Length: 263
Figure 1 (cartoon, one colour):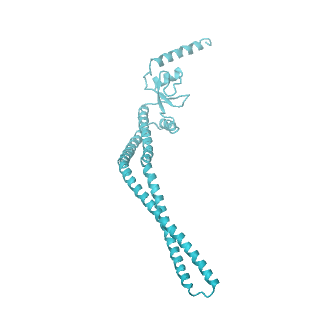
Figure 2: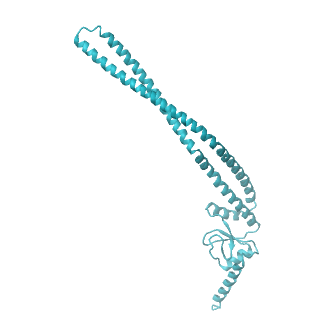
Figure 3: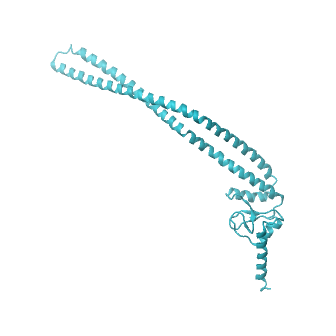
């Protein structure tokens, strides 16, 4: 495959893609960092919601028990009035039993109401403590969260600008060359374009045949690495270094030596 001016532009695209990848990672990290900053606040808010729910349940229970207490007190008053009207000892004894049971129920309800009043006081106190803690922690976290929000906005704006710039550069790249690059990039082979290092791939350091090195160096060709699949390049007419030249010459000598007997 031949790479002319498209190679230089595609290398610029790859540079932009690297910046975009770094920005994308930071963009995705920020919500997690914000969550870490807010985690203790979130825990307190959750506890406050639970305490508020418990407080409402105590209120409902107390209201129900107060209603039951009022009903039992009415029963007791009626039973006590009926004592004057009973005619037999049996009826009198039965009525006394009802009175005793009602008084016992009244005592139990009064105890429950007192306990509910204590629970309400305890919950109210804890809610006040949580509110005070939240005020302090929210103030401490506000600056950090604001800083993170501003950073997120800046990252997203920079990503949008780079993406727009990238689209313009891609339009100048040979479609076939870009498709090769994009397939590697999407397949997590990044960087997809890797320079020749000596006589080896700049990514995996696998050695290349002398003929391939010559084509990459002098013809400006792009060659896929047989080991890792990336595209190996160098600028046309520029040798990677003396090592590659020596490696190519040695390879030619070996090839000629191997071919000589067949001649």
